[in-house]
Image 1 (cartoon, rainbow, N blue to C red):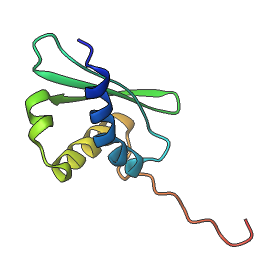
Image 2 (tube, helix red, strand yellow):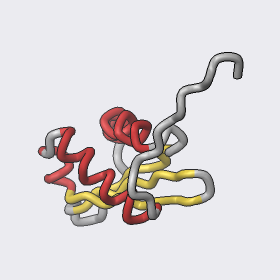
Image 3 (cartoon, helix red, strand yellow):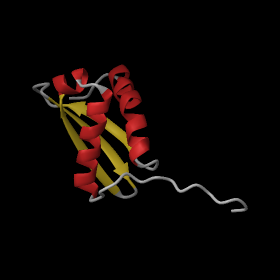
Image 4 (tube, helix red, strand yellow):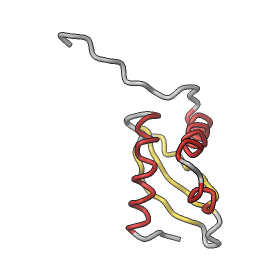
Amino acid sequence: MLLSAERRARIRQRLQPILREYDPELQFLAAFVDSTREYLAVVVQLADKPVLLKFRWVDFISTPDDALQSDIRSQLTQRLGRSEPRVEAPSSPGS
């Protein structure tokens, strides 16, 4: 079931900073709920790897951002096979 444009925008605004912190190249693609409105699915992509993140809809709404961040990192690590978020290396002078 597709969400309204406003609802998708709010989900994107909430998740975008967490996704960017994990990897600046991680892209938010879509968000939708199942027909029973029990689960929220968020599709993100890193390079050529699409990833489906799954949340209980009620939990997603009520979960504080720090707990949500932990859940997202765990799901991304499991699906992308990374143990740590990607951190951009500072560029050296003259590069």
